[in-house]
Amino acid sequence: MSPEAEASLDNPAYEALCGPHAGFAEIRGRVRRYPVDVAPFIGLPSQPSTQDWRDAAALIAPGAYAAVPYGNNELPESLKVLDTFDLVQMIGERVTGGECAEAVALGAADVPEMLDLVARTEPGPFLARTVEMGDYLGIRSGGELVAMAGERFHLDGWTEISAVCTHPDHRGRGLASQLMGALVAGIQERSEGVFLHALATNVGAIRLYEQLGFRVRQTATIAVVTPAT
Image (tube, rainbow, N blue to C red; front, side, top):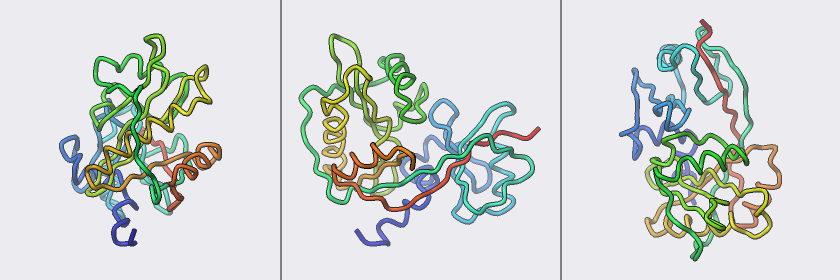
């Protein structure tokens, strides 16, 4: 893939909220954010101005929080950093989609079970309406949801895979890999590229994704912020 084709991945939340996910966007000035029950992310222009940061702060309710890109940017005094996370961004350079006979589509009715599985496995942010961001698939055992994966950021030409998780009692069976293969198949049918993010410290997951055909494209830091007053 050419650097030009990958350029939008440098700022995925902003590109998604200005593109295919524009219908979700809450807007102030040039800044956009997802509704608080969809995803915690705020999208800012790649070179945010002081006013952009002020607008970002204004989009966060008192006592609430949001996730923002955190590089060499000077955050305004109106924002307080609660935590930071180093991520690796990986793109599917050699991934191959495949069928997953056990996969079932997940929707709004499945959210309570999805939230329970997320609480057990901590794959990253997943909220009451995150399921609206894209296609989600799951695998059940004895009626219980034991694995899931889905789509999060949608950019022009790209879809992110996220919320990949398996119940601890059902690991080692390749369920997550099967679900990812099914999602990749759907994304490739749309002639889109696939990408994902993982915590830089999660070396096991990064190694698995590399085995599935992903490569590390870049590293980034996300800050969780809240209004300072």
